[in-house]
Length: 332
Image 1 (tube, rainbow, N blue to C red):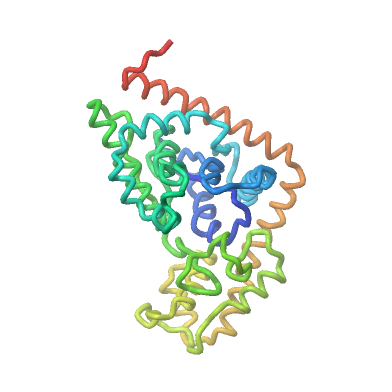
Image 2 (image 1 turned 120 degrees about the horizontal axis):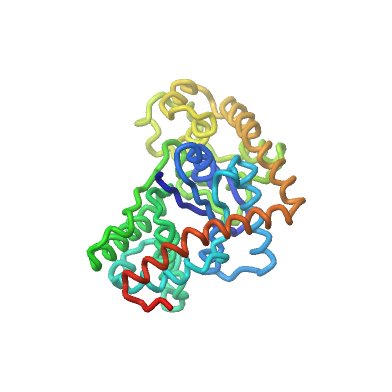
């Protein structure tokens, strides 16, 4: 059976972009794939985290998974740092990763900026850890957003380099899964920027935990332009906010973007925002309520992660042993 691996960082303020770009799609994947969904806490610590907040955020993401419909009976849910194969395999795979490949990673350049000499090694080698996350489980498919496509390409290159070095097909070459509408949800305050947890303005995003009134207020305050909604995509050129809000609506409603454009053609933003607000509240409020219920029982969330850790360890430890034998490391 084909196997999916993906994860979300526990950095707080899970938002609509995380839900529409990842978690919502994962729920449907459970029907056709063996799924492993991780809370990637090791990736989060490339930036200094408050220890207590990191722990709480890990449980919050776990609660979000469950509240959104990810079933721990069907799907493995665990936190990355609990399974040592991730870090051990990172070293092994780093020995098959040329520096030139890492130098091409645009996300490091963007995050490090002009201070790259002071950037931590973890930020630079982050893509190798991501490759290890995937290859430790021999995942065949990886749901990715546009901003992670380059990292997945690197994972594919590393898997290929290892296979070629030992004339083996030990690692499957993982295939990307990029979903249709709103795979990249943009800021409500600037349609050219991605919706982000780190944006200073809370009005730039809809958090999964936002109340009904706050969701409505944020959508009403979302940046727009003075023109009616168009009927064709070519009319959205230089209208990033209009395109973003239409994309969010189509993703929440599970309708094609073009069909939504036809439905909304000619409407003013005031009318459209009312419909978008009602739809967003209808989809997000039940998840928020379930999340809060789960967060009242942190022992249950830890139990889910403990059970997931055991299942993840069973798979990854066997694969790691096979990898070590292939390399020629002495197994005692």
